[in-house]
Amino acid sequence: MRLRLSSLKEGSQIIELALGKDDLSIADIPFLQPVAVTLNIYKSQYQITVKGNLQTALELECDRCLEAYRFDVETNFQAIISPEKSISSEIDENVIPITSKTDEVDLTPFARDALILEIPMKKICSESCKGICAGCGTNLNKNACRCSSTHTDDRLTSLKDLLTNTMEE
Image (cartoon, rainbow, N blue to C red; front, top):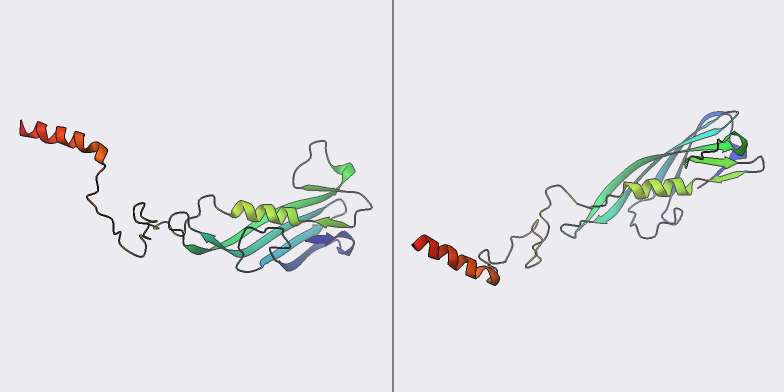
C-alpha cells in the first residue's frame, strides 16, 4: 500500500482501496473478504497526516470448541509523514521520516500491525461457548456428553473409604 507523495494536493482528501492478504504479507490469517481501507489524508506545508481505517472479516477457530467462526475486524492506524529535519531526536514509531527526494511511502506495515493487534489472543466464538468434553471430545454446544458422570479417580478411593468409615462410627 504505497502512497505517492507527489500526487497529493494540499488540504484534506480521502482515498479508498481494497487489499488482499498477499498485499499485506499475512499468510497465516484466513481472510473471508478483502481488507477495505479508507485513508483520510491531510497534507500541510510541513507534514502529511494519514489516518487509516481498516475493515475486514476473518475466519478463526474457537479455542474452546474448535469450530470455525467469523470474526469482524474494524481498526484504525495513524502515520505522520514529516521531513527528517523537523523530527526531534526522539523518533515516534508512527512518524515516517522523508527527504526531498522521497516520492513514495509504504503504509503496509501500519495496516498489517493494526490488523494483527485486533486478533484476540483467546479466540472464543461466543461467551456462552461450552467447549468440548475432555473425556469423550464431544462438542458440548451441539451434543450432550457421553461420559459417565460417576467417573471417579481410582487414586481417591482410599479417601472415600475413610469418609464412609467415619460416618459409620
